[in-house]
View 1 (cartoon, rainbow, N blue to C red):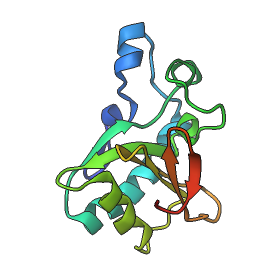
View 2 (view 1 turned 90 degrees about the vertical axis):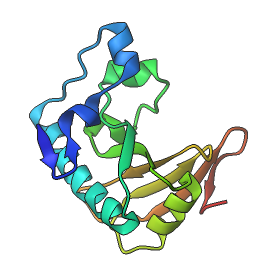
View 3 (view 1 turned 30 degrees about the vertical axis):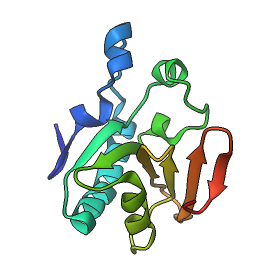
Length: 143
């Protein structure tokens, strides 16, 4: 199922952990609606960066979220967040370019200098920019 011109439902719910554990990670319709909203924002990111986005994690069921060690309040549970990389750009450069754009994200997190986490909200977007590092936890801004 195509959610937006460049993003499918399958790529937003695929999980190696779910496949290995035999979990069905198919979301209910309200989550699919959220994923469509998220993918609309990811389309803006794709246009900004003029490069394909590779999703590593989108929607997670509660069971899958526990298995991968996700936070209990993770926006992935509602289909409002995705982790990704961008072809030809470092995660740091990706995060920097998104953070200085007019894209209405809720959270933008550079995680371990390996991928970018972007979330959206139905409310007023916070445009919160964070860096997550192993021993330091979440740090404000891109550091």
